[in-house]
Length: 183
Image 1 (cartoon, helix red, strand yellow):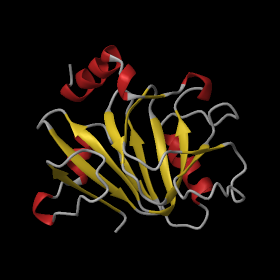
Image 2 (image 1 turned 120 degrees about the vertical axis):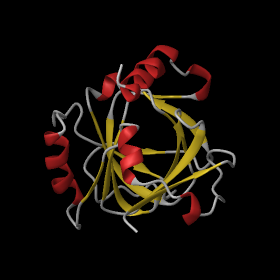
Image 3 (image 1 turned 90 degrees about the vertical axis):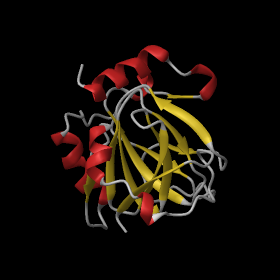
């Protein structure tokens, strides 16, 4: 499994939602929601993902180069040379303020994303080597799971935020909805 997705009608962020092959969502459907997916072979995920980031128009400066998301709970960031974030181990709704590229380095990264077209939730399960563009303004839930990921931000880290449920930006979400509708 490099990356697989399926729709579900459970609570978003629930770590006990099981893969359902009958509700599989093809990567083309994710692409229509502006989630571009790429695959790379390790072990040098950082270097290989830099090329994808450059091809997608990301500037790889010290200000926006990368940050590590650590869901392992260990806080051990010895293999990375940048600041790391230990994220909470409970479901958390989010909206990204800028496009970002996530690169799964270890474990399986699970996220539920809103499908505003069908009104359902899509669970995306990303294995190491999966690189996925997450569009600004899209809504999702982090699903508690053990993994480590690298994130490249399209813009400066100082401008990037994961916007919590209480402060979701309707204008930013509206811009995202216009992008996927082609207007």
